[in-house]
Length: 340
Image (cartoon, rainbow, N blue to C red; front, side, top):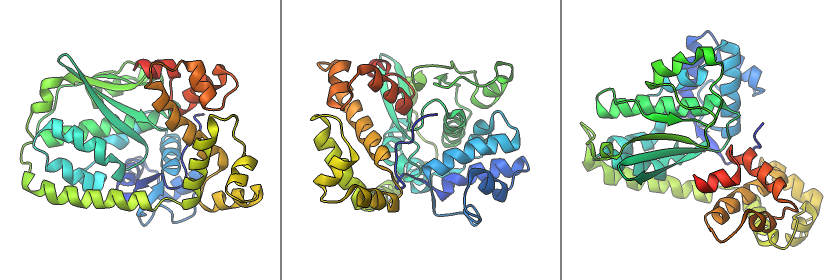
């Protein structure tokens, strides 16, 4: 099981939850059944909440697949994506001049729809590589499937045509081999599984394709609104998690970080710090892992640092412990992440 890194501030918008509920209902699974199986409070899903913890959303995907007896539940959730799924971020995409602009706005504003992962795009020669960096690793197959199926549905809708199938690689195992024809039907081709990263590759010329019927005049207004929403998110994080995160970052290179030492730096007792973190919906280990993961990704960009160096800077006694933790967080080992 991939380690959970993120505190309660990591959310999924209620509108992003709607396709999951719709796919479940199509298969005879009620919101009440999902709530019970996922350990949520009665009424947590109906009426549709404004937002939901990201951890709960991922759990709902997994229990939804079990309740529906659907080995490709994630693909079918993605097929239920609509314009409103992505909130104001979706409206911004509809105001983009071309698909290159669409990807730029995705990297900036997808967090308004969810905190499940982040996008990046790179171009080498004539090929564009779109990578989705899941916050939950390869253990949650339905999450990656729902994301890429949703991207295909929404991209086809933006283009006004069925786009050519992308060459797709996914970090998960693909499920039962005898059932993989569903990937062909939904995504246009069967991905390569057990890959080092979740990557769709396509001809870079597609980035210059215009978005038909785009109302580019709306873009400045929508962008201003989206920036305001981002600012609100940045200032709404629980203060205690920020304080602990900052104290951990400052302490990591000096050796192993302990709850007691961080509590002492914040002039709190360990028991009080644990209570305050619990009230904020987090644990000390979650904040520690979050800080280490963020720092690890920055350190891995610096080629002069070896993996042994990075392990030391993150407070690990052995590189093997760092390798294991990073694979839990990112779904791949740090060497593969650096190469990718």
